[in-house]
Image (tube, rainbow, N blue to C red):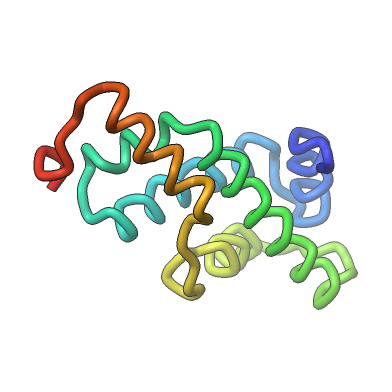
Length: 121
């Protein structure tokens, strides 16, 4: 897999943003996705504790960026580029759900910590 920090740097240059903006967007949209997907802050915390979730989320991000770069190969600048990047990555505009490996890791954490599913609801 491509080095994600290098990818963040490349995308920040392509969109004329700083790396912190792109990184924060990556993290904020992970939070948004998990809240939308799980519907619960406690369940979202469990999801975020799984390395498998972050690997999956990075892959989703890389795939989306690849699509964006194919569609817009020129460097994008302007005041609205951060908003466009946000829209392109928002889970509100895509139908996605974690892979089986991510889901299995979530269940494993619940079992290891003896968390009842109804405690997460």
